[in-house]
Image (cartoon, rainbow over all chains, first blue to last red):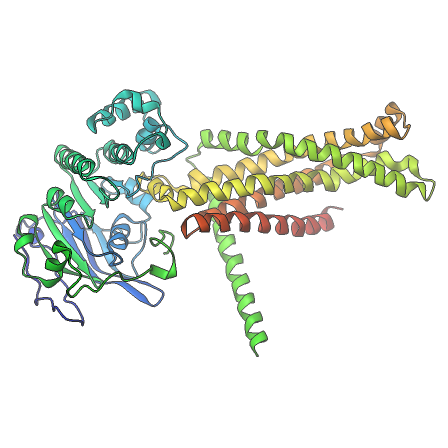
Length: 297
Length: 255
């Protein structure tokens, strides 16, 4: 299942090869559910993405791994529509949605849900209101019915109804992630995005979240795209893994084969060693502290 | 040469910022006038912006009215014109001090609160989350705040007018031996509807400015907690400056 790059990535400095769309896509001759074509993105003088090509077939789960500052979050934000690429296209079911804002994209094309790194729950709302938000606000489901569906979704992620009346600030980080997952899946999305789903969680809670992600993706039969640098999570929730480095996808293959990958970047990353072609954090984007903002269009 | 370059850069920054604020305001206003409308949010914001500002606006107005009465009495005494004090207080409160003081209180309280709240939403990706939940953040977060401020600041100004005039009445009757009934009659007969409506028009514009500055600086906050703090400061300072600048322009137009 693993896909070889057109040329083997160099283990020394210099331009990195670009990987063409997934074999999974071409093999089953289906239109990819999500397809990023030649996406580039520059912040100031720094090119974060340099012609990224990723295609994900319907029903598949792709995990994008990579060191900090390599553009994983930017790739995800472009895929979701929170950020526009400088060049390249984003196709959903073959339809070009590059210029469409995330709120329109979420409404007009196959539904998507997203679990944010920090859960991004609305702290002024109760837990059930967070989960039911899309149902009530966008889908115009009656509040009573939406609340019932929210409580049902909370139950699926292991939270009993008494949590529904609490505020996010009263929950632990793991519980907030569960609520975020319930919110992402309650409207039965076709595509799910996971932004560092296990970051900041202890190993046991991380595994619980990974299991919940697996269960929900399987139950909904949806396509999933995740970014993480947690290899345990990547192995567990991904059918395929792609590695992003230097603005390109430098390796992509079946999740089961990653430990056998003959790729210097992948080997260094999964072994977690300082010696190798990856030389450290690429530094802040746009000179800011933290992650790039969605408003940078 | 460096000074010229600095002036040029500042001018460009100013023009760029003015353009950005104008585009932002345009999107916010367009969202306020096109469905879907988030009435629940509007009610909540009207409560937060209007009702919870009442004590601060009321207290400011009563003390300002009282101090204004004392000052005019002192100044009028130099020309043996103490008796026109009720009319001057009424005119000053309704045309100028009522809307301006209410706006300044709102700028300090509400503009800062809006910037901090929206800035925190930005920092914690809640704005992004809104979009992924198929909700336009301009409709959900910006439009209700702009509308609520435009609707509630004139109401607060009416309250400030009444309480400010009452403050003048109180100090005049209690310490300056004015007849209470005569004071009220003089005030009522002197004021025209134009005096009151010009103040209310100003108030609506000030409300828009105050909410806009809070929303704009909060929406584009970056850099975590420090960025939110900076956005809050910028929101208050820019709201104050724009309130005074627009006050002069509107006073020229509405006199």
